Structure formats: structure tokens, C-alpha cells
Length: 161
Image 1 (tube, rainbow, N blue to C red):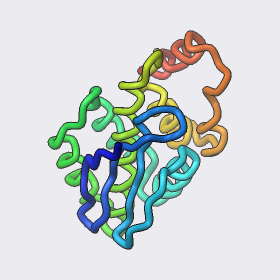
Image 2 (image 1 turned 135 degrees about the vertical axis):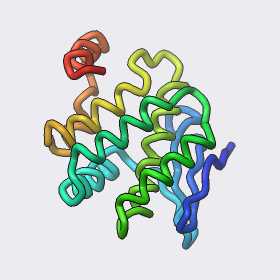
Image 3 (image 1 turned 180 degrees about the vertical axis):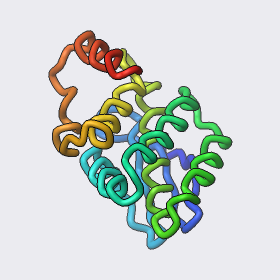
């Protein structure tokens, strides 16, 4: 069952709904009504491109602010914080608002996934890989597949999270 969690300042909204694996699939509905479930490759690609425009470290640091406030539940104050952070990005503020909302919702989904050990840290690894390590979005999106959680945990700890 669909659960709308936030509306975007430029129209449209984000929600959780049933996906292929669980009830924590993130969907975006654009102002024109088009609805889609963004993939990691999609938003990693856009965030990396925006990082080349505004500074990868700046976008990563703003992401970490959101990461640090993410729990199992949505928090209206975090959505408000996202809107405030996005004001910096001027002409791209609406797009970055969408992707930060998607990342926030994705981290909430990870926190709620049954049997997930690494939880929201898996999204941070991807963001670190595309923004700090400058790896390809496709590589980062698929990096953890088939790897043991202990190896990923060790890698994350070596990067400070």
C-alpha cells in the first residue's frame, strides 16, 4: 500500500510502495503525474554530475548531514532540513531536493529491511564511491552485490563510517 512521505517544493512527491522485494520501494511522482522508482545508477549518475558543478565534497557533506539524522522513521524536520540545504544549489535546487529525498527515503528503507546488517551505511558507501572516490555510478551501484557484509563493513570503517 502506497505511503506518501513528502511533497517537493516544485510539485510532485515521494512515497513508499510495494516493490519487487518488499514494501519499502521508493517512488517519485513528478508534477506531471509520471511515477517511477529511481535506481541507484540513476541518482548516483545525477549526483555525480551535480558534484562536478557544485563540488563533490559539498554534496557529500550535505548528504552526510542527512545520513546522520536518518532512522527507521520519516522525520518532517529532516525533510525541512533537506529543503534548506538545497537552497545553496540555486538553479538545480529542485533536482537536488528530489535526489536528497530519494536518498533519505532509501536509507529509511535500508534501516527497515529485514535481515539487512549494514543498513543505511550501504547508501553512504555508494555516495562516497561516486563523490569522493570518483568511481562510475554503475560500479558503485553494483559494488556490494555478492560481497560478504563483513568485508563491506571493514571497507566502510576504513572510510570512517
